[in-house]
Every structure is written in structure tokens, then in C-alpha cells.
Image 1 (cartoon, one colour):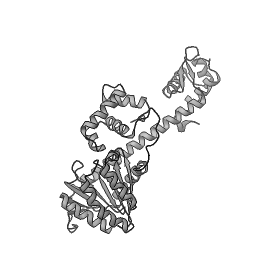
Image 2: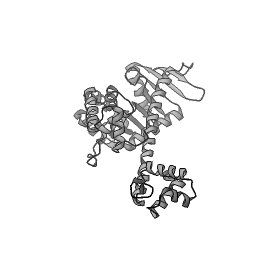
Image 3: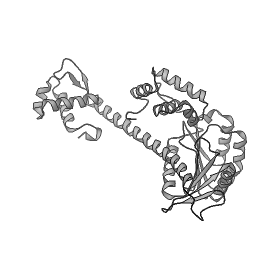
Image 4: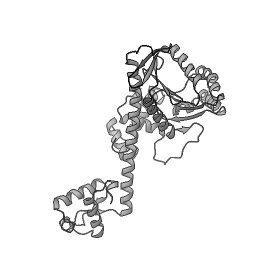
Length: 346
């Protein structure tokens, strides 16, 4: 009955019997359930791992069954944690796939007759096409062309932290032209821009003209999607100005659109008031640092992913390890799971 929550039939039967007969020993419970003592002990171990029984010296089994209300809360919480962990793994895989797609597309040999004039065109027998753009000038030119031909939407991941005032000012004219044509604009920045006044002013300007902006603690990759048909990603995730790839393949672009929608759904509108959190909950940026630490990222990588300085990343990591009373990053991850800050099964 409770197998959907991770409780097998034998363990469930033993748990129910322990609720009804709290002072009965393991051997008697096994006989009543038609189990060998070994199987009854194994079922008891499974209940203990799920925290559905607690040590109690005065009972026949040495354990007492927790109440059914608390037991169901524990099982549901465990399942939710496993689902959250799976979702994090999916998002991490999508991000890694996005970076791999960009890097591999840039390495494909050129196919004759597929160039666009702004870079090197490539293609495959399965209809997945791409263009390689070399250098900032080629990237700017092709982005201008794609924006000019967009009819429905431009969706952007904008990592890297705060942008310069000159870059923000230069983007207003093309953004205004897109919005004036009725093209929907959605942009996801990093939370770190919330303290950068020029970026806040620019976002306010975008909002007045119909653009939508949200923020997240970290972003997986720099990316621009045009009409859900073309995706532009950097060839080198460490240096977006070195080159870019324009992807046209239906399946690939659809996967990148799904990544964008997933991040957008969990992002916070920039003009939102800070969300209420429990007193012992971590702020989103610190939680992002903790997740990156648990994945083995260095301080330098964390700084890039969050759009902060390496010094800030080191300070955040040190603060978290001190708060978790951890001597290593691995130990910090273990303590974070125990505190409920990270889901189990990472």
C-alpha cells in the first residue's frame, strides 16, 4: 500500500504490527507475519533507515514505531527530497549538455554551401545545422541580424554579473526596436546584479517598455534564443567574446528552450520584495554556493557562475563551512544534507 512512498510490503506489515503490539518481540512478530526471524530483522533495519522506528530499550524488539502521522510526514519528506535531488541532476545535465552542444558544434567540419557570411556554417545528415562565429565583430553582426528577423520572442541567459554602463546603454536601441515590434523579451540575470545601480536602472527601463527580467543565484550558460528556432551560445564558456555558435536543429533548440523555461519558472522578478524564509534557511546565493561546493567546483568557478569576485566566493564558502562546522567541502555537503539545506541522494 505504501510502496509508492518507499516502504515495501514486509516492512509495512511489520510497522503496522509494531503499532498494534508495541511490546511484542521480533521472534513473535515474525511468526505472526509468517516471516523468518532474519527477514523480520531485515525489515526492521529498513524501517530504522527510514526513521519509522526509534530505539526504545523497554520494547520487545528494542525499537518503538513512530506514530502514523509522523511516519507519513517522514516518508513524504524523503520522497520530496529525492524528487528535488533528481530535478537538480536533470538541470545540471541540461546545463552540461548545453555547453557540450556549443563546443561540439564548433568542432564539426564545415559542410559545403552552408555558410552565412558571418561565420562558418556546418550541418548534419539529421537536419541539425549550426554556424560558427569567430570574434566579437562577427558575433555582434549575426546577433543584430537574428534580432532583426525575430517575430515572437527573444529569451536570454545573461550570466557574468553586472554589465558596464556603456554596454547597457548600447543595448537600449536594439531592445527598444524589438519591443516596439511586439517581440516578447525575457532575460534572466544573476542575483548579484541586484546591488548594481546601472543594471537596476536598465532593468527598470526594460520594464517600462515591456521587457521582463528575473534573477537567479547562478546560470548554467550564456545563451540567447530567437523565436524558439535558433540558439546562440559561446564556444568557450570562459570567454564569450572568443566565438559563438548558432544552432538551428529543432531537437537541440527545443531542449535549450526547455532549459530556459525551467530556470525562468524558478527565477524571481527583479522588482520582487525578498521572499520570506524560515530563520534557519539559507539565502538563495549561499544555497547556490553550497550546491556548487557539493558538486566539487572551485572558488574561481563559483565566482564566475555567481557573477561575483573570487574573494567574495571564498568568503561565502568559508562562512558556510564555518556555519556547518565542517573541516572539508565534502563534510560541508554531508552536514548540509543533515540540516535539510540540500536534498539527500545528491
